[in-house]
Image (spheres, rainbow, N blue to C red):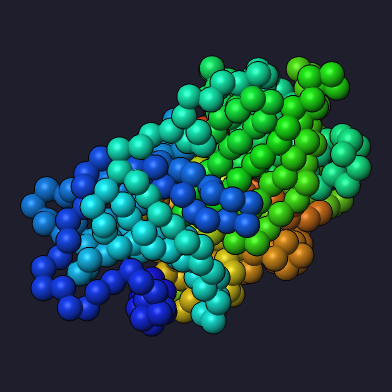
Length: 416
């Protein structure tokens, strides 16, 4: 984060978000803000809740609001006339000049030591609507939608995602399930015959737009991601839409029975499946990355679960695949992740997050298809189950179903 802030300090010299001559820091109005990022697809809205920190005149607690999620940002501070909201886990930040009810500035994310992405940002105090207030919906989009992202024909030629939506009036919430994870908490509106949904969590920046055709029961639109990503998508209403079995996408190669690895923790300690801590214990291996919001959701489940269950003869180890293979670069990111989620089990640096390279690092597997992937190993050290992807809490009943199946499998392995 130190490098990011150094870059940010230089970048601020060319942005109208701070005034060096101000003698006393400005104050931020506490409460709810309607925030927007200015993307190529138009305004991408999300909620912010900003509250002063007790005993700290310059400090604020900030939450990003997407649907039912209130995601805590890192502690925010006022410097001069600007508010700084860091999200160290994702190496990003919001920086905005305070102007009464308004905040105006930029969102920035460090991709590499030389590359910083940015988008204009603004937020208005006391405004709570998402896309548009008081505009009626002429369509009800609740239910399941067989979806084809990247469709070039305007037809659902393949199903690579399932949209799961819940509409109340003109308010729409839900997500897209995919074979490798979900799009987390999406929130938005149905305005007339059109869908508008968005998400901002510091890493994910998603904007969805689509028009509904009541005759063909299809949605046709576009998806903007991050600073420059875009793809067409089309969906067809289908209550029976399903994805491939997540237990059949990643598997051991013929002849392999266990997962062999040896990787270092940030402190330099080497961790291997042959270590005494894993002997005669049920072991869960997380294939993950600190940059990955779906991995964040899984870890938010796994860390407290491990604390409650480790005395049953269970261990967990995280294999983190980061953007850089260098420990000096990626070790601090792993440490920040461990601190944020209060992780008691070891997280090692396993390599880079390129899936081809990650697959080479774990040659017992057919391939690393998704981050996260969860591997269940029995007391004899043999792989018994591999689950590709993760359906997080934004998926509702699909998350509940995953937790139930997870606990059922662990109970079986512990009892053996």
